[in-house]
Image (cartoon, rainbow, N blue to C red; front, side):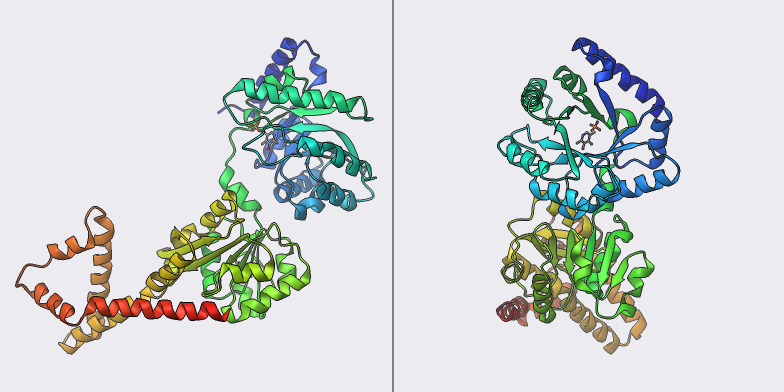
Length: 505
Ligand SMILES: *Cc1c(COP(=O)(O)O)cnc(C)c1O
């Protein structure tokens, strides 16, 4: 593996070549080292090579890194925030960064202005302009630039310095080139009108030459300096999750999550702190205040009983907390998406229904998404649940069926097992052996089904049933007892009860 040292030399050489090809001066192009997801030791290595500009995209992770580096004496680093800005992160960003390159809407500008500490110089900002028509949602639309500039100019603690753009992620370099040229044109136009408007931030590892050709004065380079990023875990580490309710299922989900997520970003809220201590022991914050708990959360698990959920949702609604960017995950049976969205006024809701074997990672989890849950949030949901078992996505009707078959299913299987155990005992086997026999039989049968995906379950049954034999005799009694009809009644009864619940909430 190349050292950061070698990488920096290579990157500076690439910049030199590009500058020469563009007939520009090397001093006109600043290198921003993008250290997001990378440990502070790597920042120090680049610092020791003379680099002073570093870029970060995840507010929580970055703020910690910046604090620690300041404490260690690295005080002259210029920190650039370059990632998408969530409203609830503006305070962290305003406090820790020198330049924010990804300002893309009024509310973000206003909040950064309000939250910039008075003892710090004005926050330098760039407007991130959306230059690729599709594929990329972040950035201010060109038609909205004037309004955003007007807004920023009203903010005494912000100083507008230029534009930032991200080229489309495509192998088609002509396309990137024309996007860059377009932003350069806009930049030049505004430069004549605005004072100290002098930074055009364009270019990353794969397109820095095109960016420099198109007048970029700052290239943002991550991969070529620090190597590929380990994305998944780091994104997870930045996600703030809150559980309202710390009962059985919440515990199960929590245990599953902390295999990938940092428990320190998880908060659990419930009426009795002492019952939440087990979460605190594993690194989570605990509180009795639901509203405090959800303020900063991106994901809120609604883990209270259906009978209590309405009052919790009303509490959230009347608190005035902005829920528009939060993902709500409800595990309340019988509580429809429409009932939740009706109370919360959002459609970023996921309903899940895990069954109890999820505690062993062997569960089935039914998952239903409301209309505004985006792809990233779907991925995130699955990632949070993946250690509990198999997720099956569907609509609410499917969720009800999964609830009846898989949610109630374990009890039906236990009942069947109990009956087999008592028959073994009735015929003289001791209780302990009977249990062993039955659990291994059910486990073994399920494993046979799992291992033989190409065979139908019926064919597995037929394979162990010779006509006129002992199994055949037993199965005949199941038929005579109307076993299939009984199971039909069983599932129907569970479903009917679900529908009754749905009417209640
Ligand atoms: C991550 C990131 C970069 C760095 O990308 P590399 O391809 O690793 O050089 C540059 N700009 C922005 C906005 C980024 O988020």
